[in-house]
Amino acid sequence: MKFYIETYGCQMNVSDSELVGSILLGAGWEPAPSIDAADLILFNTCSVRKHAEDRVLGRISNERHRKQLKPALKIAVIGCMAQRMGKRLLDSDIGVDYVVGVDRYLELPALLDQPGGQDTDFDFQQFYPGLRPLHGNKTCAFVTIMRGCDNFCSYCIVPHVRGRERSVDFRQILSEVRACGDNGLKDVTLLGQNVNSYRWGGYDFPRLLRELNQVDSIQRLRFVTSHPKDLSDGLIEAMAAGGKICEHLHLPLQSGNNGVLKAMNRKYTIEVYLRLVQKLRAAMPEISLTTDLIAGFPGESEADFSDTLQVMREVRYDHAFCFKYSEREGTSACGLPHQVPEAERLRRLQEMIELQRGITLAKFSAQTGKDVEVYVESLSRKSQQMVSGKTRDYKIAVLSGDATDIGKLKTARVMKATAGTLICA
Image 1 (cartoon, rainbow, N blue to C red):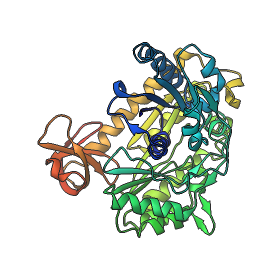
Image 2: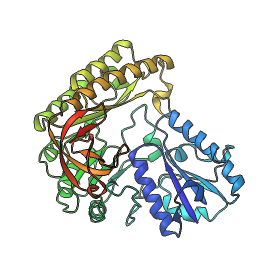
Image 3: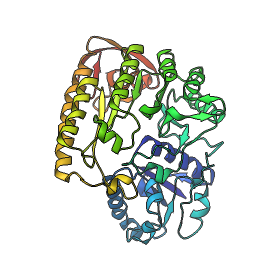
């Protein structure tokens, strides 16, 4: 029997899909080379925005025709959307047979022995110990160090679908990172909804980074996501010490207005955030900063939105993930008054994107003439004589090379840049 997984959403979902793949492999299933060969199709889903859910619902519905060609074919929905919607997915007329929540993946093989059903109970003690994810990428790896979230930002569904925050045993993390390096995955990204609040035994996040920095088999160490309220001086010091820890930090801002930040329940002010940026750049002048931004949060005035644009101009992020506010059933922001009209959300979003595009182009272009270290991950899509990878500061770069360079560190000189790629010699 063969399974095929389609993954939507964040890097945590990518990591969970690799975990599910490992569980199914251990239960005697085989990965299907394509969706056409699958006996089981799993959709690992995202609930952060309504658009993400609508996209998956449409995608699942489009696959119903396969059941006419292969009556034994089963469809499963796993992940955040499964956790949020539960039985509603089974009751819908889109062909779903199984619904499995984020803490119940070990029960998936037993459930698949049944004709259908769901398992979405939370299990706050579930860390999936001893399992090695079935990594799809052969050069880079995601390693989950935390599950759940305690922040309850008013717009965010994550704490409601992934449960409360808990940290993975340091020994489990260390073992997995070593195994990644030993298997040729030299670029490792640590994952958590808020890695800054990692706590296990006597380990906090800076100590975890320092320990993993000593793992000989890896070449680079990254992490996402950092909540500004928990970004410590100790973390900045650990990053500035260098080694394998890359000079890149994803630090979500969400809004540049204190009133909106308070309504979002973000627990920091813009003044605190900007001081963090100053500390980071004082310790690492070449650090790359990326962020998340929301346009059109309930009650956001035009002046509030202008504050966000001003912070973007001041900080000058290397890249920003920009979104319009999406109402999520079950979050406190969903019931707030003064919802911004959809057309206005879209207008603000577009203005935000255009501003960031210009900043990003300038930031990339500023590296012209510099030598950069590139970890080669694949052949370039445009030429078999070119390879593609990332710099330490998380910029995509293309350079001359071939398949023998994949998995290696190469030094190259930046000749020119677009708003998304460094083009190197």
